[in-house]
Amino acid sequence: MKYVLVTGGVVSGLGKGVTASSIGVVLKACGLRVTSIKIDPYLNTDAGTMSPFEHGEVFVLDDGGEVDLDLGNYERFLDVTLTRDNNITTGKIYQSVLEKERKGDYLGKTVQVVPHITDAIKDWIESVSLIPVDGKEGQADVCVIELGGTVGDIESMPFIEALRQLSFSVGQENFCLIHVSLIPVLGVVGEQKTKPTQHSVRELRALGLTPHFLACRSAQPLLEPTKAKLSQFCHVAAANILNIHDVPNIWHVPLLLRNQNAHHSILKQLNLTSVATVPDLDSWTKMAETFDNLTNHVKIAMVGKYVGLTDSYLSVVKALLHACIACSLKPEIEWIAASDLEDESEKSTPEAHAAAWKILKSAECILIPGGFGDRGVSGMVLAAKYARENKIPYLGICLGMQIAVIEFARAVLGLERANSTEFDAQTPDPVVIFMPEGSRTHMGSTMRLGSRRTHLQNQDSLTSKLYGDASYVDERHRHRYEVNPEIAQVLEEAGLRLVGKDDTGKRVEVIEFNNHPFYVGVQFHPEFKSRPTRPSPLFLGKVYIGCEEASSNPFKQLRQSSSSLLHRSLYILCI
Image 1 (cartoon, rainbow, N blue to C red):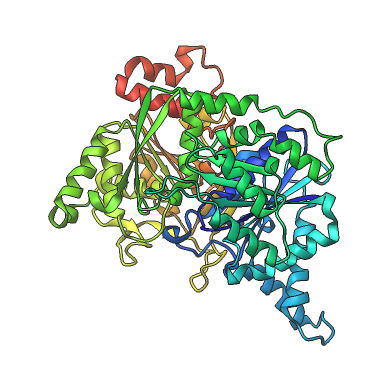
Image 2 (cartoon, rainbow, N blue to C red; image 1 turned 45 degrees about the vertical axis):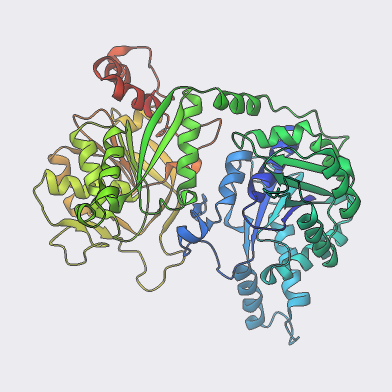
């Protein structure tokens, strides 16, 4: 196994995840099989209990792993299916070591950070790197490892030491270290400053790791004198100083690396030049250039709880982007804090309330993503009501589907106090309830997680058509609450189609509304499986079979009968 380690210095948030993913893309384009591991030094066992405001979205894997959002980048860039073990945390390592200690596996020895914690880290890396993630038999050729945080952080020290030992044990021809650093430009001086990177590399070398490459983040391309200075003081060959400057979209990053012959230098370091091919990045070039040249827009209102940090909905944004690129449209996402739509907001913050409603009413498509807690729920209900009554295309994901059910029960069934027991435990009309198999005492890994099968009850439903007349779909889930099975029949009789259910036939997974161009809610998260070259059917829908015949194609009929407003918004979701 060949290992490529990506570390970061100076500051966090430099884009190590995108850099690691892009390196993987370039190596994969050279004909190599690539897998990825993300190391997060925090003590949490996983990302499942962390606030989206603090850490961004929680990405869910097929096996139910709740992991760092960078693993979403790996899956999207490399088109692989990772496991929960591809995300290593301090909590997982210490938990595994302490379990062994309690079993007596260490034969009475004093358990210490070195060697027991570091050995556990090395063993984890070496065993997980052998797991195939691309659907083929056998292990990958290269494992790209991203070490979270910045060099010098106290919590990452055991990982640095373990990686130092790993680099020594596997040999120089099997280990490549790429250090991502920042090259700032002071506004007054206007000079590219190398001193922060020099200090970062010195810190890394003091810990026993010497970088083979520097991936320098900067606003503008690096100047040759800057490269020469970095090479001289960081002990890195000038040819191995890679510049990842700001680009119009992240799909340019693999192209930047290719254009600087990064692949050739990495392959040489890993002694893989004899088995690699010339990198084929035609599809990436096409995507990057297509996005740069887009002129037509589609305006999408994203009504959520965590809009203060857009990374909270990163996969949803990427899924919309994938669909837009395929449709030659540029997404114009308008973020709306759900609480700003509420009636109380009209009194307390009238300007924010008016602005939120102005954005919502000008949108061509409304999307409500997942979330937890009762903050902003009333505003989401109002957004769903507006979309339903004004025939604005609506997609509700997880909480967004539950919101649509609550709104329907109140407005159509006349159940004014209909609610979810998550928001009102004493509601007389619980249309959304806590799942009976859930835990009320533990939060971590107790939700309904991972890939689950949804059976589509109606073959003539929009959802079935979007998935190619499929009778079932396998999508990823993350929820504790569900539509109350006892009220399902009443909802359906009133016009809410329950077109998708789980294996038991009782749990509602997909809803649609009659007499509406596109009003769909799903309990699962389709955004987690969206890929740049294979957009999610619910965000795109171009896998519809038999679209040539207008008489059997609801989307063609909609295009013929709908206004241009609906046409443009449906184009992204349904064509």
